[in-house]
Length: 202
Image (cartoon, rainbow, N blue to C red; front, side, top):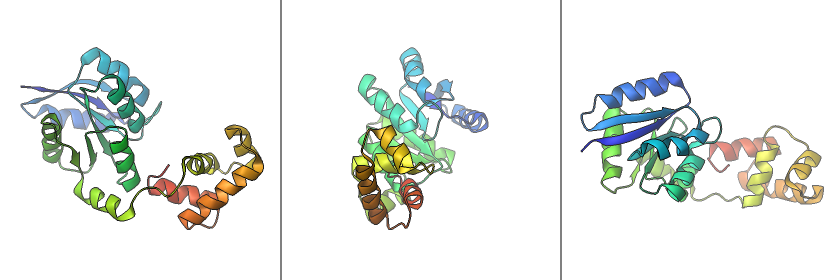
């Protein structure tokens, strides 16, 4: 049986290399490629892959959101998130949206091929080092609203800008920012956003 794969990666060079390497596997065939996260669902509807390999950082929408859409509409398609960002928070979020696997891009192609076969067999495949780090760090300490406010603050937006964007009062924004700064151990809201991003909490 040939495993049909949809490849979603915004960097053409990386996408081409992944396709070439996977096509060397006798039982794996790349049946579609996309370079944007918001093209994944439509491509999957058209080619009905068995597995979707999703880069986490793509224009349009990220691989986690694409995995969530696939799980909701085409649950038979197994999503495997590929990333250069080995962040434990990303792993946790990938599992929450229904991804069947989470691997870092610098894994050997033989390991990627094994991962594809394993998710086809109904297993969940997770990079071991990342799984250990995720267990050590634990779940995000940020509430949903704190995360929203930090995302809005990441580009240096003012309290007034954040309040207007999120339909909150400025006092409420300050409270969320203060709480988030404390939970991340940061000194400023921009630093708090950076720390949270690095841990995959945003």
